[in-house]
Length: 332
Ligand code: SF4
Image (spheres, rainbow, N blue to C red):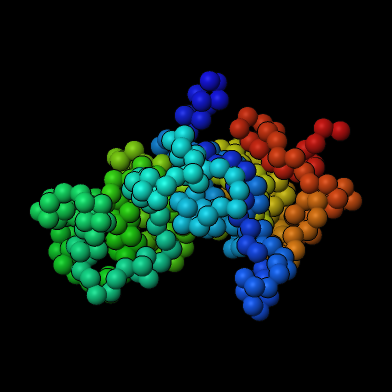
């Protein structure tokens, strides 16, 4: 009974999610398994209704794989993704189709997913048609309404994708995600390809839409300063693991994990409030096919010692709602 109450507090409750890819020889499925890429390796986090959770880390850290597994665009290897208390891994195709109306994804480059031969109006009305929502006239009204919400003009309804700038295309991507009135949107690097001035316009638009439409966001990005702008809480990913999670202010004021400290060191000083010495990070992200033993960050960590190579650090709460996995914070 108590467990039930805890789960319902969250719109999304991710528990011990793993996504491993098997590597085989030249004959594909006929070849024996040679190894496994641990793209996402046992992560847990929760999203409360109406909040924005930022997921940040270098390219290859497992952020996008996580986003895709949450929507079951790929099947997780193990773990649970509870959406409003229902485990999406156990849903039938029909149940999944219904729940997908509530859960949408916006990509870095919406242009590649917009049909170049269709007008924007048709693109926006298509999901409504697929789900059998409204008459032709109602669908058209919804499309015009959404265009206005994302800051586009009625005449844009009749135009083709190639007639828009990068920022406008991202607004179209957002409009398409919003047309089914979702509750939860995964934004995967939604502003990375845009100029800085356009980035802030889109981030402000997202904040306004969130308030107006009571949306919950998972905001994925490699740039921690962009994530800060919009997130209530931030999870830092490294090589398939969440190594630190905290409310945004707490993370910027007192980053605990050496990797988070290194990410913040890469941000221009004026945008951080960090009072302590920041470290710089060297070397490449190790291969997830052969992840380091013990703490996965030990090959790049300036504080690493023998224990770090042998023992996996426990992910634990250090301050209120501020978690990390690092031996530096173990009780002696
Ligand atoms: Fe660095 Fe050791 Fe902490 Fe890992 S556990 S982050 S290697 S100090």
